[in-house]
Image 1 (tube, helix red, strand yellow):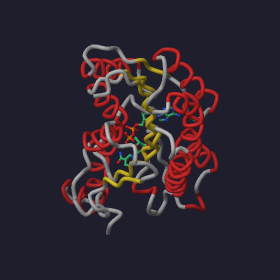
Image 2 (image 1 turned 180 degrees about the horizontal axis):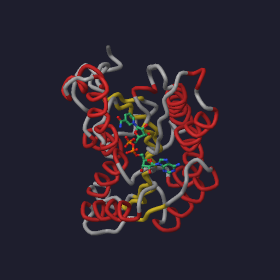
Image 3 (image 1 turned 90 degrees about the vertical axis):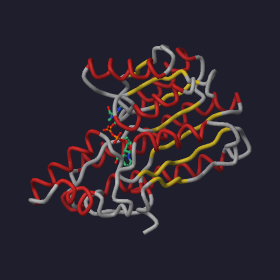
Image 4 (image 1 turned 120 degrees about the horizontal axis):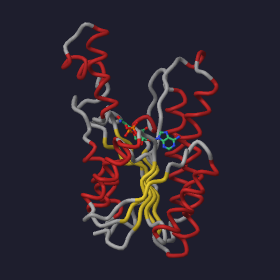
Amino acid sequence: TLIGRTAIITGSTSGIGLGIATTLAAAGAKVMLNGFGKPEDIEAAKRAVAQAGDGIEPHHSAADLSKPVEVRAMVAEAESLLGQVDILVNNAGIQFTSPVQDFPDEKWDAVIAINLSAVFHATKAVLPGMRRRNWGRIINIASAHGLVGSPEKVAYVAAKHGVVGMTKVTAIELAQTGVTCNAICPGFVRTPLAEVQVGAIAKAKGVSEESALKDHLLAKQPSKRWVEVEEVARMALYICGPDTGSLTGSALSIDGGWVAS
Ligand code: NAD
């Protein structure tokens, strides 16, 4: 149980982050959500988390994580509203695809700022409190692309490899404390944004939706099925649970065998 624990989950207005926030809240944690969206979508996310969490309303920070000052303000706000931050899930991320030679500089900067630098700034900001209390869980949502490459994803792959590296350094520095730092490396996860790609590929390639999924989108994922948001969320919950103090500095794959193949 996470009763008495508090958590920030970045990028939790949709997809994997919302799933993790819901799961941590269901286990008893008080959470702060973060991320963009239409007001009604953010309200719906808050309601889903409140419902899972025994009616306890989560907070929401609209911090733009591409701005270090807003990352720091989000952590300060969480510390003041929740009392402390025991769990930090660095989940917010964006993607942009293009061959290296054509990759727009401003897209490179945006992907690095959100997917990599925000992880650094948030980790730096929560560490003084975690060290003082001698307990903390920092969970970085990297990707299979934190461990292997794919064409046209130079900024994303560079950022996610960087996150895996940062996870190792943070873990080593804190190894003699009660604070752990791990990365989760999912393959393709079923999220609304990912799912719409199936129809688009089927249309573009003139193939069935099943073939679009298995032969194209999941070409690298030997399981030939989506990783479910709940699977990733339960992995995060496990990391926050008891008897996990020695689990630190790891890049945990949950990818249907992608990186193994
Ligand atoms: P998503 O697009 O559904 O959610 C992304 C979240 O990040 C949203 O809440 C969005 O509002 C927020 N966000 C985006 N830019 C932001 C900014 N500047 N400041 C604050 N919040 C911002 O994505 P998802 O698929 O749930 O992905 C979540 C994480 O998991 C990402 O880091 C992604 O790289 C990683 N991941 C996803 C998959 C997948 O297949 N979906 C696979 C591996 C890794």
